[in-house]
Length: 463
Image (tube, rainbow, N blue to C red):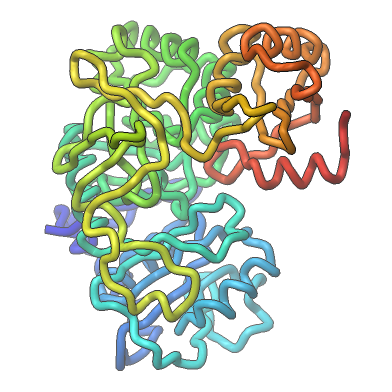
């Protein structure tokens, strides 16, 4: 049974939100979905909706309502820039739009639960019957390319995650990631699948209000990208009084070995489970996970394929994934929504990998994250990892014209980084450029935002 059937105990809480917190039961959530679909009116054909979302009850209701009605939905951040939103509206021509009242007040529509519903001119171009969801792979949603996910993709990944995390109806995850991001959405999907209750908040983990909600709601799990865990390490989460916490999950990029070991030890001391995971939006979030009992001996590995999936390595070293959660393909306009499954369950991840003697997989870099410096191929991910390991500082590596550019946030380390690169890479110093910025721009999911970084460097050039 799919998570959007909302088959949990009708009287059990499904969503807990607000201050003071109030619970919405599974029965009430089903009724809310029906009411939202009634606001949209009679459904003459499969529709496309745009949801400007945040981690609130209305966004979750609209998302589930679209799935229950058989419509297709694009999830976009509530804070998406006007220009980016207008460009996507022009390309995809949605049939309806839901967002903040103040954001959409200039558009003809109606109020619903403090949000504004805008019914757009109907577009007659067909939408494939299997298409359920559109997610952007760009943290800034500046790119029109969207991942096309099916109902089967969503259901399979939710069930798989629930299986390997051994989730049950007693779970109380708290939202630490935006729902328009595939990892954040997978937390919602997998827990609804087992009839659990979600603690909804947009508060940052660095705020007192977040931890008040955590304790008041009896949260049982935390999900985070590497940036989240950096913040939690600074907050000394292992010293907090969190009696209900049971599970930690990490994905969204490589966590440094030092932080991985830090949280592994904290988990052992407190009886928590710490899962390191690997995924891509193109696979509906999760591809692999490392069981906690292997973490001590396999720090840095992505682990094994999730239940129902299969990993392998191509002749060129690229990691391949096969599974029912692999997307239908990409879309760049409304016309592409009529397409069916173009990948047939096989995803070329773009990551280079190896498999060890125990069958555990490790990433070794990105196929496209390569710089050529005077003819020498330099893996940019390995450069970042090298600097983090040797000097303990964050760095972003970029390819430039026959050169390697490394950007730091600590100018005092520039000379030291240059020396490490010169000795390690064996390339002429004229092909190495090191500079610093106050901060390294990141996407909404906490990953380094390389396009934004390039723009920053153009605006503030360094030698």
